Length: 110
Length: 114
Image (cartoon, rainbow over all chains, first blue to last red; front, side, top):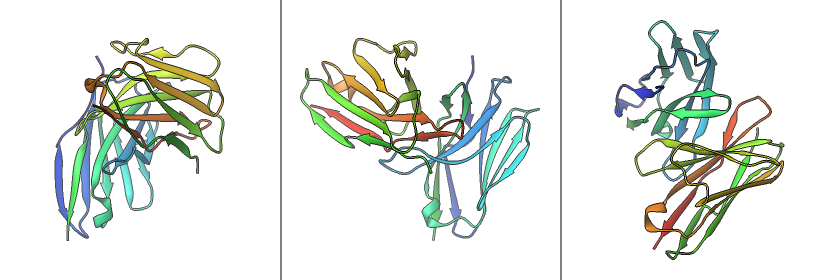
């Protein structure tokens, strides 16, 4: 069956460093992927998305990389700030239904 | 950008009562909305797909008679947890399809059944 998973449940980085959060997926038919950020007590917030016909997409301070060969997705956050501390979920979206990974908790140390 | 409003943000109810949660798309029409459930420190799990003007589509294992979904207009979907029990306590989140531009989530409703 399909599953979406994240490599590490927690990630701690120093303020100003770059962060890399990884995600593996198993459904090779997936064609749309999304990264979300969730702060405590709030709903998920869209960060960036990528379609399967791309291998890289950049936003403001964030970059998503997609490697379809190994079914791997990563989120890179440049110059990580304290406000980036949150749980990050990758999700594959098929027909509007999002299947979420387990989440990685990012902690930014001052 | 697109905004999805969810109400209430927190609710405490007694066991055996019913609770209604509203999900509204504020600046766009959404023919399809999605309801998710999230347990503490866990990921989101899709419960059902809410379709305007037709019956909701429930995921396997979700009791449709317990989690009633109504999508009566293009901007409003409601989830009613009927005869709530403590094990229904959870964080419920909706999302809506923003005209193909993406999927916007509400801020969630924390339900506590006592």
